[in-house]
Structures are given as C-alpha cells and as structure tokens.
Length: 202
Ligand SMILES: CC(C)(COP(=O)(O)OP(=O)(O)OC[C@H]1O[C@@H](n2cnc3c(N)ncnc32)[C@H](O)[C@@H]1OP(=O)(O)O)[C@@H](O)C(=O)NCCC(=O)NCCS
Image 1 (cartoon, protein in one colour):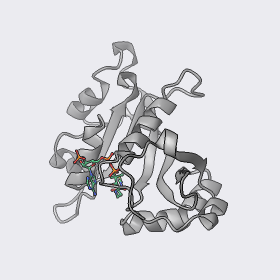
Image 2: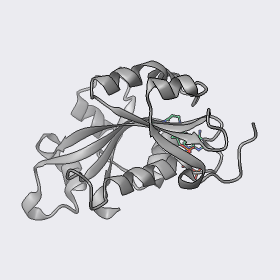
Image 3: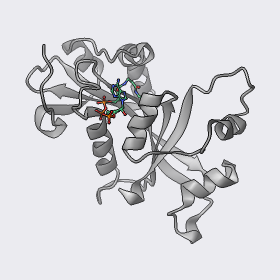
Image 4: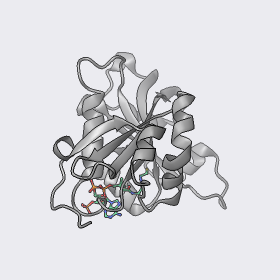
C-alpha cells in the first residue's frame, strides 16, 4: 500500500495498550530492526505482565490491522550522584540549586519503532510520538513527578540525529566519556548512547 503524504497520529491513528489480543488482530509489526521486531512480537507481553514496561501501539484508522508505531515505556530514575562531574552539570543545568544531586524521576523509552511503511518518509511519526510522550508527562494531571525522558539510543548516526532533532541531549559529551563511565574495555562496542530530555523545558 502506498504511504500517505501526511500522517497525523492524533487524527489518523488510534493509540491503544498493545496486548496479545491487539497483536493477533493486526498484521505483524515490522520496523526493519530485527531486535525490535522480535521484542514487539514476543517479549513486550512478558514485560507487560511482569510490570517492567508498558507498550503502546498506534493503529492506522484507515487500515485497522496496520500498526504504525510502537513504544515501550517504564519508570526510571537518573541518579545524579553516580554521574561524573561534567555530565552531571549538563543534566542539572536547569534544575534549581536546592534540588541538585538527587535521584531525578524519569520515564524510560525502552523501545521505539515506526513501521517500515511509515518511517523515514518525512511523515515525522517518530517525532510525533516523542511530542506525545513529552505532553503526556507534562500535563497537570500527571500522577507522579517526572523530570526527564531518558533513552539508551542506538549508537548510529540516524538514530542519534533523530533524538537530537527532538531536543534530546547525550548525557556524556563524548563516546570516550561514556565508555569510561561504563568501564568498557577498548575491544567492547558502545552499542547505545544515553540521552535525556528535560521536561521542564518542554
Ligand atoms: C528512529 C525512528 C523511530 C524514527 O522514526 P521516523 O518516523 O522515521 O522519524 P521522523 O520522521 O520523526 O524523523 C526523521 C529523522 O530521524 C532520523 N532518522 C532515523 N532513522 C531514519 C531513517 N531510517 N530514514 C531517514 N531518517 C531517519 C533523521 O535524522 C531524520 O531527520 P531528517 O528527516 O531531518 O533527515 C525510526 O526510523 C525507526 O523505527 N527506526 C528503527 C528502530 C530504531 O532505531 N528505534 C530507535 C531505538 S532507540
């Protein structure tokens, strides 16, 4: 099916909790990333029942068996006291002095995938999902305090630029800084970069 010229999630899709019932009803989700496709086809349900991560799907209203995108979210926290000085300063830049150095409440984007039919086509679906999450955790009826959105972003140019374009910053300015923090040996690969978005600035 040809992809549309524009796709507004709020207008053209319905968001729902992704359950096995939804998965059975829809075509298999395919975002061209093997690990993510596998996660959404199997592991997402175990995360859900174990209360380790909740997955949401956006379904195309014009084609109700087509999942447009999925995201898995979990509560998290950023423990400032365990972060090296320069990275800690970057994180806390806009936090009130009196509240610096604490464990900051955060929401973790555990997984995010946009269907291959819709991604990278200028439809901005990934960005719309990030905007939705920013709004969701900033509303006055938010049940708990949540200061940051955090993600372990795939360490490749496209994914990193996607998050940067959406206002996320790498916690560690350089790969070496992050490698040092994680204690990686020179022959180990840095597969992900830790990035954050300060919801106070949303
Ligand atoms: C990363 C991903 C969620 C972005 O979704 P999207 O709907 O294509 O993103 P948007 O249209 O909002 O933003 C596009 C930007 O993302 C970046 N990008 C990431 N992957 C891209 C791709 N395959 N093709 C083109 N741009 C891509 C580019 O910087 C692009 O900016 P530009 O349009 O100014 O060139 C999607 O490509 C995807 O599902 N990728 C596979 C899984 C993945 O990497 N998930 C993130 C795990 S942390």
